[in-house]
Image (spheres, rainbow, N blue to C red):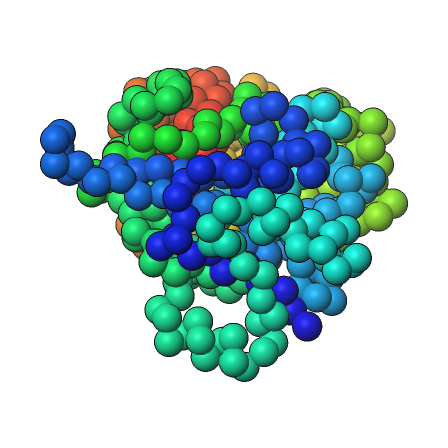
Length: 449
């Protein structure tokens, strides 16, 4: 048996009973939602038409939230339900970046992720999920997707899923839904909602076929801590690479490498909503998550910095230091690719080159500080930033995020500083700060729901 939802939007009256029933059953905090109703509007007054859609976790067959979760807090049950063990969650919010449907939130009281779990506790005692029980129009149904008759009926009635192009194989199906309610790119998101005002300092208009007149605000989970982590990680990688390339003053470079590695780790721990559980990444790791793999790389980086500090050098140290330094720089690209909900990041195939040249630019900066700088490394980084500006993005969401990124003043400032750093290397740190900040910000500005 494999459970799935069928949402009949032709029968739905948009009354929010499912939202209220879910909140009451699962003690969902104020301001958080496991299921919610979105209203959109077509046309101009007085010729307008409104449509509603019930949005929630899709219990995907190929769930990206499970793949990226570093502690196996998210997992798939034998009946197809994607569930979450809050006791294992460290509150890193990576699952929120991986989910293309905005279905996960951080519980403000517990500091852990939370989402629809299909009211599994009710199913196990032969009760329907709370949302099904309270729906006055019986517009929400639970079905066994292993039943061929159910699959045939869904096909015959033209059932659709949200964002099938993301490859997650959603197990929540819609009947009679207005396509604009399921596609955030079809909605002009710069409009003020009719029931509330959602701050939008960086507007991200869709194709404007419709307007959102009721929706819920979503807090951006990754901010200055993650942008700073990218900067300090690049500097740590650059210091170790500079030592490996024989930039001189290797003891000082080893100390710099270790110091920035420690700061990087502290920034990552500080960004967790459950920082006291950071050791879960070591004691109960998901080996497929690049958060865990990145932790291993940073650990190796720290250990390789120590011999340089005490003056142990040689080819035996040079080659692994260079390789681990580059791995420290580049592994974040694989982490961002696992964040499949954020298309700017997930579809950014040039990112490993950008991160690699960023580390080489940092190495050139440290070399310059000790009288052995390389303008070539700075030029390669500037070229990577220029290439980022022109790099084609394959999906509408990625293109929208890219447009927001390169159109923001921070990108222009970062690009200018990257070019000027060829002549005066210290300016490259400003380029790192501006470009990493806008990259993190723009990636989260494109609405997922």
